[in-house]
Length: 132
Image (cartoon, rainbow, N blue to C red; front, side, top):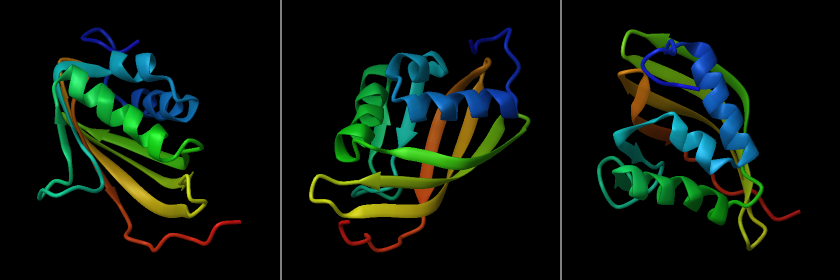
């Protein structure tokens, strides 16, 4: 479990990614700082759509599974340098209309006191794939 006694390292980011793939919101939130921020891949602002504070970040994370019920982040690679880190993966998900997204993406993290303070998500702007 993350916290001030847990090292912020690539394994922590791998564990965070595994919680995403399990769709485990409680596990995800255990990695997040109390005053956390999440900047989603899409939205009206320079940073996409921003969710600030634990309740808003929880809502933003859950929105990913609402939009893509089968969402998966595959082939993850992670690294940490000081108070910053990066996870690179392939995002795959199907919307309710059957269109699919499959694109490489990165999350850029800022850490504070052994937890994730900021998760800033970026994804390649690949057109949706046709429904199967």
